[in-house]
Length: 78
Image: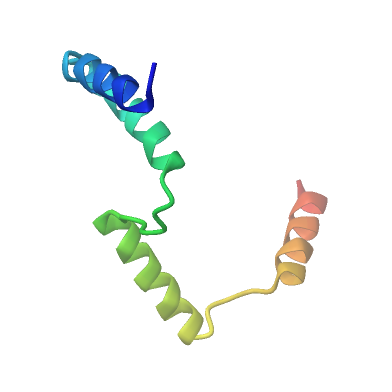
């Protein structure tokens, strides 16, 4: 079977599927094989990035060592 024949069979079979979850799974598989480096973010994801950038600009950040030290102190109190 040629690649073109296989593609046509898949297109026909996919067009007959009405299960949205299954179609989303197929889309995930297809997207993972494409070489596209374009990421589509939701509004919530974009807002989180904007907020994160604001926090960094305002100095609202901690080093990994600081966080680890806080965890160790928290564990000692527990």
